[in-house]
Image (tube, rainbow, N blue to C red; front, side, top):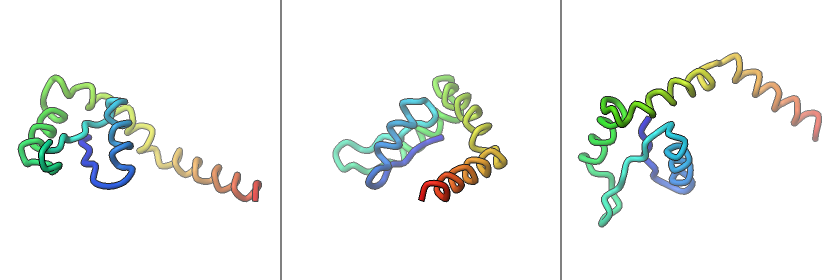
Length: 88
């Protein structure tokens, strides 16, 4: 996963994702603050192909099992709604 942080809390979330090695935050141009096509291409290559990016690919597979399980997600939502109703 590559992360493009644009506004507000996205930078913080992107740093947490990068710290946990789930995703790689695409660096910005230091003078203008923009994403360059070179930095986007380099980041994608790193995460998708390079040996250095293997940790990201492995961690995303692990996360996919958690977030891709729709039954689990439905149970979480149901549990949260039950909590809200019980604690009005």
